[in-house]
Image 1 (tube, rainbow, N blue to C red):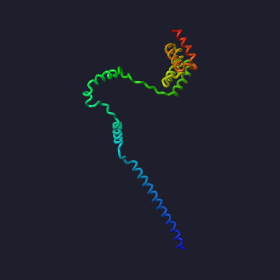
Image 2 (cartoon, helix red, strand yellow):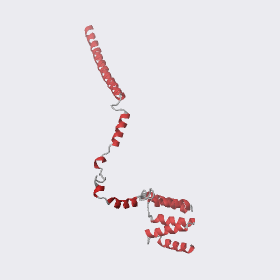
Image 3 (tube, helix red, strand yellow):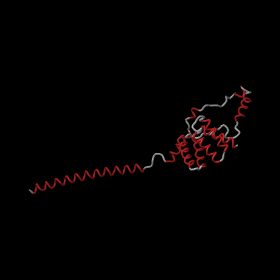
Image 4 (cartoon, one colour):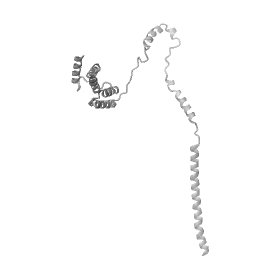
Length: 200
């Protein structure tokens, strides 16, 4: 019996040792994987930040449009072959020289009808509270975002008239009538223009 008890006692201890060895091996593998990942994360990249920035600057300076650029220089013998052409072009060049920097430049405004609609709505809010100056600013902003808006033009004219600027009021009433000659406020615009004409 004692030998059987000893063999039974040995079996669990060998199994326990094998289990402990497997757990240690798994722990060691996980630990090594974590250490490897940590060292890879801490290692410097192939290129430093300054190298990457220099490369981006180089790419920015090299344009693909160099390949598609059209050479507009005159041919080498152009002056000799066409001696009178310089006089003909001189007149065009004199006309093309702008008087100021802004000549020939068109100004573009952002087109945003939703913002214009919101400005009209806020302008109406101020107008109902008899804050004509604030309403005027909102209607002007509405015309900035949507040129030739009929409602903003009409309401701007009414505000101008209420604030005493008769010439601007006349201008915006006329603008409304150009946009919507038979619009819902056309009759009011004609009456207001007649009234303004009598005052002046």
